[in-house]
Every structure is written in C-alpha cells, then in structure tokens.
Image 1 (cartoon, one colour):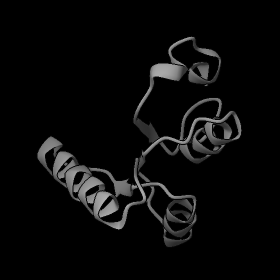
Image 2 (image 1 turned 90 degrees about the horizontal axis):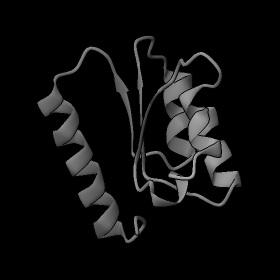
Image 3 (image 1 turned 60 degrees about the vertical axis):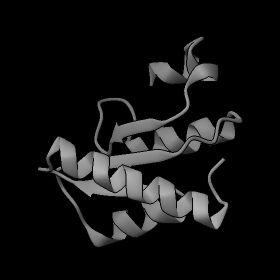
Length: 93
C-alpha cells in the first residue's frame, strides 16, 4: 500500500504483487493505482488460485494471474510472452 503514497510511483513501470497482502489485495492495489492515473502492466501472484479471481484479475487488464509455486524461469518466460502478446495487439504501451 505504501506504493500509493510513494514518490517513486511516477517512475514505476511494472507491478508484480501478491493477491493477499496485509493491507490491500494485489487486485485492489492495481485498481487504486489506476484510479490515481497510473495504469501499470501487472502480474498478480497467488498461493490460493481460483477461477473467479483469475477471471476478475484478467478482466482488469492484468498481464498474468500466476499460481504459486513457480520457478523464476517460468515467471519470467510467462511475463515475456504476455508482454509480447500485448505488444503485438497494441494494447501495452
């Protein structure tokens, strides 16, 4: 949640957040940043995946909803693919 009040928010280009954090969910953080005028490419991770949350997350425009456990290579590969797909669709700036 401190990202919302951080002076570094303006220079943040990408968000990777957990769905379950102490003060706010990753999805809420993404939406709050959007309301504050900062639309970020986002990867949300979770240790408790469910289809409803995945669909809701992707509907907001997040790049990925990634279930734990995952390897660094898996995460980076999936992010790379998602960014490439968005770039080819013209939806990620």
